[in-house]
Length: 150
Image (cartoon, rainbow, N blue to C red; front, top):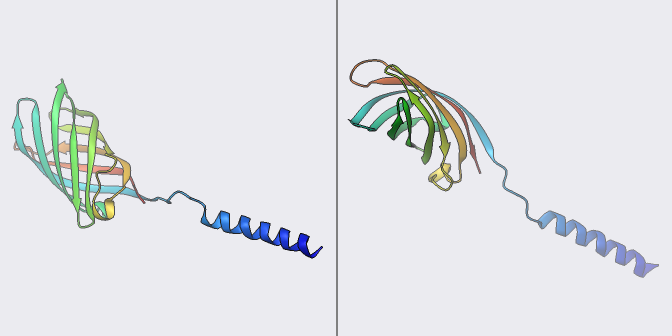
């Protein structure tokens, strides 16, 4: 009986140790984004456009953006967006962009492995919607979405 009790105790101990040390995925902390940005077109030539903007009220993403776009057809564009904050940098791929003479919208998906600093390993999607406020290319935009950190 003593051997049986010891055997059961060792099995329970083994199960406890195994479960407490087994691999578990890292939990991600997700942050809702609801920010504003003010920016300007810094370069435009035929189908290529580059912009810079300051993000205001973005919490985790307060900082600056730098983007480059290629116009793909009438009003449509794709491109890249980099956000730089005091926490690090994060690159996005721009999909399904659309621009008229006064408005634009696009979806930005975080590029896997692009984050630095606190933004390393970040994932997420941002939705950009903005308006051009003058002929120089100055614009304002709303940035909404979610960024998740490891």
